[in-house]
Length: 216
Image (cartoon, rainbow, N blue to C red; front, side, top):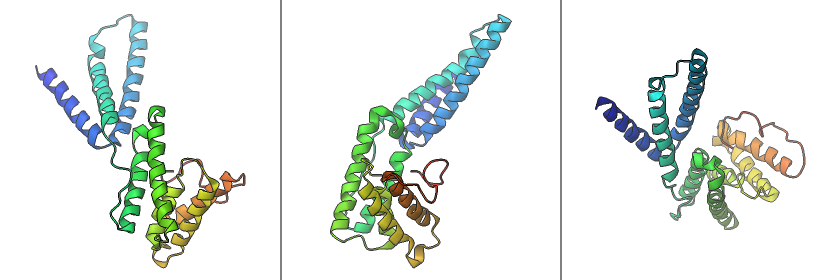
């Protein structure tokens, strides 16, 4: 009875966390890998000892089932709207940037079955930024940073959009109140490197590839 209650509690807790916190899915994946390694190692040892007993696998298999349910629950969780239109350019761009990053911290972003959906979300944010840019509404330094971030994730990998992203990021980086902002300064370099690579040239700041402090 106690074991059943503990199991159901685990299902509920993991399901709740997976549904409301997308990053939790990555934690589950890490735990899943550890459990699979344990099961494989335990199976090999027991085969060598010729003493395979089901009780050795009860807890790992129970945990495995909880994790699988958690991952499925995470996939079923709806994504937030990719953009918002409040009439306030700064708020809209900040939201677009936040959703850009949120999508890349969601396991769905790395699953081929959701690739089309994720590219579509990038596209609608991209179009919003371009509309604001054409209307001359992106004037503040922080707004330029948000806009540049969205543009440098353009799903078609358009070199002209990478160039536009760099122009905005460079303008943001030159703002007095943003000269000490690491993310803003990093983006100015990253957009330049991505633009250069898109036209067949060498990157200058080595921001593309390897370990980065920002989601790309």
